[in-house]
Image 1 (cartoon, rainbow, N blue to C red):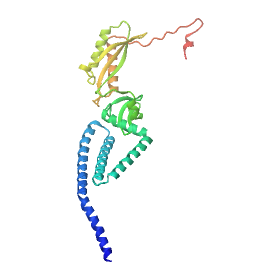
Image 2 (cartoon, helix red, strand yellow):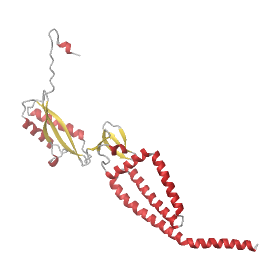
Image 3 (cartoon, helix red, strand yellow):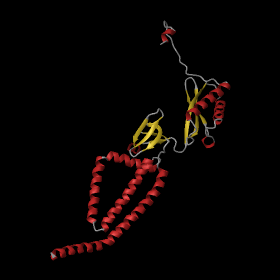
Image 4 (cartoon, rainbow, N blue to C red):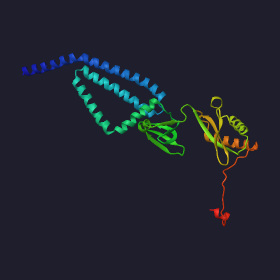
Length: 290
């Protein structure tokens, strides 16, 4: 019986010595864990400020913050295992994670491709929420940037979700990234009209509309084409896309109406297309009616 108690005491003493030897490593591991938490907190707050400037989509911003936080704690865990003398376990965990990531990445390579493309778009900033863009043959307003796709609403009301990988690989047109967008329309004049006077009237009417930009982005008029029945002038003007109170459609309607009225009052004739009908002997005008 005495031998049994001596064995138990000896066994407990060996564990006590092991705990005493391990105690500094445990303290150091707790210190590393605390430092990693502080570092994670500081990085998260700093990155949050940067992401709020760069990303308009809160979903993507939160996702990136979670990834950074998890990566910091994974590094801290591997370091703690190393401190505790469990380097072999850390290596095994790292190796298993690498193999698992490779298998998952291969199986879902398209999803990861679009996800990484979304991160690139978020930081590269080729467009913002509300910009008018043309992506993958679709023109509309950017509604959201998610982890997998970019959501745009076309001008006819359709919601289009374009995979981010497609946007990275193809050309992208952004019509409003600098806050300016040019609009135009065509005015046809009768041949023999005073072109200089017509241009003066058109520019005067455009400058009278407060929504249309002046000075550096002042409106302009150019000869577009010489059609069979009219001399066509191309009218160009710019709008501030950052001013959400401006309706581009309303501005164009007002501009066209005011210019037509002013030209009409000045005695300009605005012809339409002329269709020439030729009749053969034995035919009548009723033959052309359909």
